[in-house]
Length: 476
Image (cartoon, rainbow, N blue to C red; front, side, top):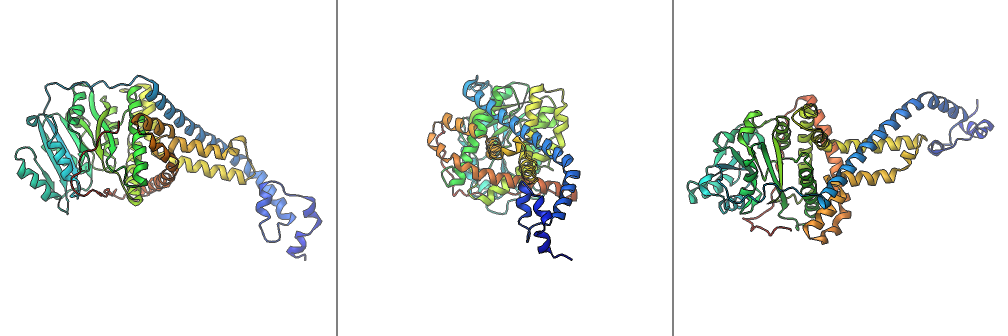
């Protein structure tokens, strides 16, 4: 019997050279492959691979096509923001018979920031007799309750706190309970770390004079953008997402998104769709699509700026993105089909809304595309598409990069008038990969949680501010 060494040196092996990438892989085996192994492998590959390879290649083509559609979408938004007609239909309303409104401040262990939000609302130019401020203290275990009560004592009649001591956890559940105390048909919602400007309430209320409007969203601007690299990158993301993406959708008559804070909702519209759902991690996205499916319109007001505190630690950012991903994909499963078939919406609204819903599914598709590319490459079944791996990576980055396309961020920074921030653009690749893998992991966790019937857990974003901040100047 011949040894393995003899087989490896046999003339039969020398007469049948193995070409391509498979040869490089087999050459890594100890002593190299015998001729018999190579022949048998060729038979197996010839019998099974063609059909599988064709399916994988077709699937990869579909993924790249979807990526290109998103790239064109972002390019369209950028051109609209840069060259198109800008729609600000309600921004000039300053004098009116202002309606009674209720402002909710969502708060859970917010002792570091709650004072700043309350003070800013007390300084607003909205008529005090038409404004009810309700801090929603949701089971806080720090000094949040004491701070709220101190403002109630100093400003009697202006603040009506809602101290929630039990019930289901989460912002949506707390707001659902607090709605019973609202007055008027318009509610404005802020997270406790937000600092509204003096004229912001009027700007957010003005669109509700239009009877078709169900929700209004303002622009979010980071308050702590200069703290470190992460906050600077998030500042770029916010600029691209609001200054370009949201405003372009407003310009083109598409689907602006209500963001859950720095925005308002018509109470009668909320009641008509069944109120807040307390079983979702993205109550804002859920509310947006339920309103749209029921014939209400959502408006974005780019000049209605409010200032927030963004995460300063990557671990906190990861939890935030994972929560958004789970909540957004929940909405995709629940309302995707209904939205696509809704007769209340135009075709372009349905297309744009569907693309918006699939944003948090794109990282999974992107990873799948990379995996298919590598499999086809090492299977020695390359094609012009597969050979363009570097191009695919950069197209994907430009499309998905940290939730705002690369060119959207560039235009947003230019429009904001602070071009020095453009030096940070290469670092966005870091944020892109962090988001890519964290969103993919969150999607997997959502699938497992749904399969195991587990309850979703709300991860609160950590606050960093010390004391009540002063309001920064607008970035423009």
